[in-house]
Image 1 (tube, rainbow, N blue to C red):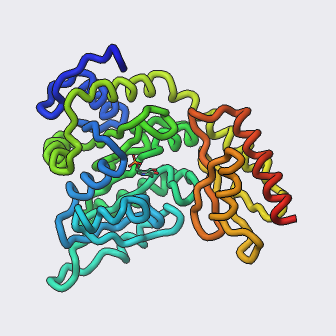
Image 2 (cartoon, rainbow, N blue to C red):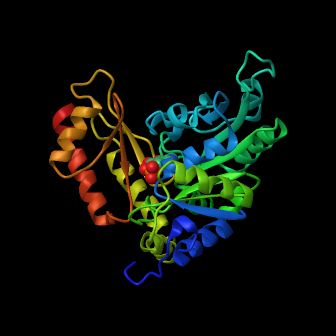
Length: 324
Ligand SMILES: Cc1ncc(COP(=O)(O)O)c(C=O)c1O
């Protein structure tokens, strides 16, 4: 990062950013890319590329842009989101059924957002057939398709296919460098050259135009060079964590496909997810609250396999004390 060649990226003069954008676009099989500060900004720009104020966008059930972007889809992009499908999987029939009639008194349905892997569904991998059928149905109906690929590379590792295969005919993709890949910050939005020209203006409007930002892009390039193969380690560690919790009083872990483990607590037990998470935090284990009785654990570059098994022991001890 310290050695990165930099320039003013607001006027497109940062060579390291340009390198990262080219690299990610090529990897995804798309024409062009745009470095943005966050996955949230990438998704919000994509919504504005595909839809205008007052339009409707279909999102795979539990989508990040519906749950975790502070209402930006309505506040900033000005679109209304409609949840379709279940646990991240949307069928062609569900897409067709959700599209509003073309009449003046209905919002116009403009786009579909898929997410792979799917965060709220526990890092679930959406298979290629399911993706293709959803994308085909959306395109046949004239909708644009955006993929929230914050963890796209985790899906690629799990499926054993390239990123461009997962992307297929999808129009725009956001991919995070800051999650399992371990860069400190940043995402890339990719799409057609025309999408990215429009996206540059939208990024600036959102305050995401950054000057000598090659120092951050350099971290993204480093992550792509060095951290891809180790995503499989995160998946193994997550699996081992979940397996260690099987049979533990009060805990129902979902065996993960990638690096996210959901753990359910009993609905009428002595402790809800918020209280459990607080007690785990006091012992150095960070678990997100994903529902009243649902916790989420994530494995990543910053946690070694040894630390993951130590965390599992702490969670087991806590559960034994609280639920036995
Ligand atoms: C699926 C998904 N999309 C988008 C984002 C947003 O990324 P950021 O936190 O960089 O805004 C996240 C963050 O957790 C995510 O899980």
